[in-house]
Length: 458
Image (cartoon, rainbow, N blue to C red):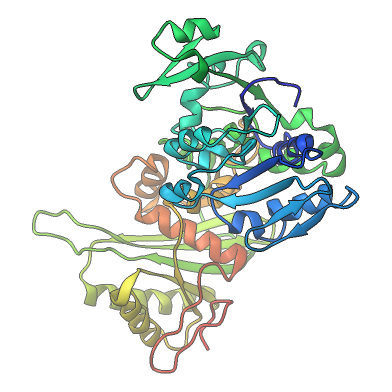
């Protein structure tokens, strides 16, 4: 908040008080009647959801005498002087055009890596003011190696390690965009010498943060650091250690050396789920095609998880139906109560397949879930159990030694760059079902069969 830079990026890891800093920074100009600030998130739900940005503003701005909040036509605060702080979204790339012709003294991007590069440069052009306060731009962020923010911050980040360089934190450099290319220098004159108009040159800096800087958070929530340590390795490197280079790669999300191999199924399993990931295509004449995978996952009384059976085959639609039914019968005979989780593809064909499977599995506990989000994000919760907390320790997952074990571990270890990921998807879905019992969007099927929010068939 002491930085005089035109553009200041704050963050680089979780827990550093990024949102708090943006909300408080926005108060700097509220005694000026013509002061206007806009705090952006990528989508409106990120602002208005319970515990979101607007709720956070209530905790701070309501302490200011005379400040009044409004939610229409867009959420904002009006202060006694007439100054206004708005909250807005830029959900689509061209949403920036809604701000054409505006003048905004202070623009703030909360979670800057969620935005497009074109949105940043366009809104920077709206960062102007005639109210007497020099216009400026603030952004908070967590690491994302492929974002435009990473490119802007290259000088502040060690290329080899991906970590911020401490002695460069807060150091100001200068930049300007010339014919679509960003020119940098240690002074305005250096940038101008590269073809930029000196009046277009902006000062820029990055201030690194860490949860360890935020002693108030640690005091109020002492488990927070432990929660970060329990994340999968990729997310842990980003959110705890501030690594701007790390990406999901083979051997990082489900490293085979982290699981505990067992020779028999333990007798302390309290809940079973068999999750299926259906192939989009059957086996072709050349032996190619997708696999249908079914993973049987159990939760043990001691809190560990056991992968007790894995099916992975190329089959036509009729054979898939028979396989699912026969497996449900065998699972029931072996373990009594086994929940069956099915994934529903988008569109009418996916709905028809779900209805067909529900009828087929009449008498069994079944949930049908429309999967959302990318595969890596969906796999992260199971990855956290697989990898464990400490690098030198085993994870929290047991895998049965069987004829399928080697194939299963090879695919898990190779995710997300491997050719196939059907067993990964089925494993992740089984874990979601075990831990929540109601993940996904409930659907209504034909023939009077309905699924309530818990996912259980009525």
